[in-house]
Length: 265
Image (cartoon, rainbow, N blue to C red; front, side):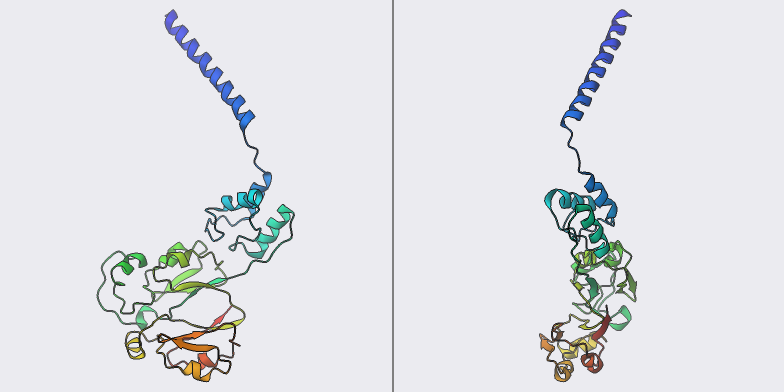
């Protein structure tokens, strides 16, 4: 009995000793965290979207405090968050360039032809691996909504198999851009009224017209009628130079398929 008691007492003493040593070591070697990290973290959206180039909002907060990362790095938070972080850091605030997601495909499922019946995994990434699932267009949206599921700000809704972006919610985080296997989503800076080509098809006009009602058919009307030489054709696809474009809307009005759209920022 005495041996059992001795063993219990010894174990208890050792436990107490190691607990004290661990406490002393913790207090002696612990790294004091700058309180500004938590203050900045409290101002960040908390979406961990990665648009800033860091793995998480905490990683960004630590980088701002410890490594001098830009105080306007959080594009999701915009100018309001940038101003608050700048105040915490005691530096002058710099504006955040606002960009939003633009989908370079204008045809819903009801407006384009199919080539087969797809019965595979219903994600864009999976469908793209098997020759684009049932879509006859090898350039357009596959329509399974990977971008909608990936968006942390509820800024994308699928309508007729085509993503519709709510600019009032979009923060330009870029997660939809990264998840799209066909690279049809880009981040764009828009002013009040802009005109963009909402198509990526490189098919010749006849084929493009046969498989998609909204496809650019390389008719060249936008190039012919643009008074500012802001439109050009390349590889059967129209392009608009946002620098030369004066937002007159002529290209939009003469496009026979609606491949050129008006975008209001």
